Image (cartoon, rainbow, N blue to C red; front, side):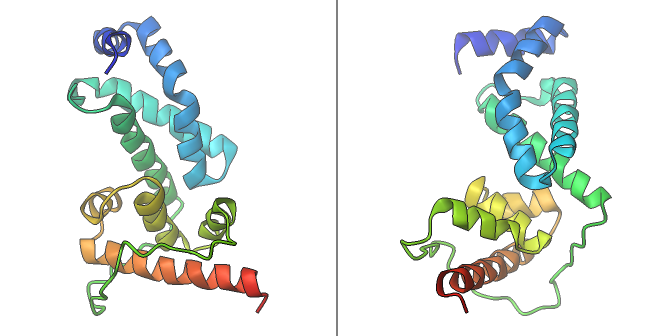
Length: 180
C-alpha cells in the first residue's frame, strides 16, 4: 500500500473529512462500475455505492493494513448491492435438498468467435441467482466459501448455481452463435 493511501486511511479513521473525500475520489469510479454491474440501474448503483462508502467509513477500524483497501471496499460494495437486490425480494432458493453436482470450475473456455462483451451480455440474461454467483466467481474472483458467506447460502448451493449458470450461459451463447 502506498504511503499516501496509508496516510489517507489513517486520517480517515480519525474522522478527517478531507481524507475521506480524497479516498472517495480515488475509489468512487471503480466502485460505481462494480455497483452498476450488479444493479444495472445508474441511480440505484450510485445510491448503493454511496451507502457502501458510508459503511466503509463507519467501519474503518475493522480494516487491516495487511489487506488491499480496494479489495476491502469492493467487498463492502458488493455486499451492499446484494442487500439492495434482497430488498427487492429477489428469489434465492436453498438447494440443500437437491443432489450435489460435480463441477469443473476451471473449464470456462468459450468458442474463440465469442468476445468478452458477448459473454458479459449473456451473463446479464441469466436468472439473478445464477448471475450473482457467476459474477462473484468469474468476474470478481471469489471462491465458493467466500460466495457462500456473501450470499448467505451453502457452499454446495454456490457450486450448483455456478454450474447451472455456466450451462445456461453456454446455451445462450450457442443460440446466439448458431442462430438456433
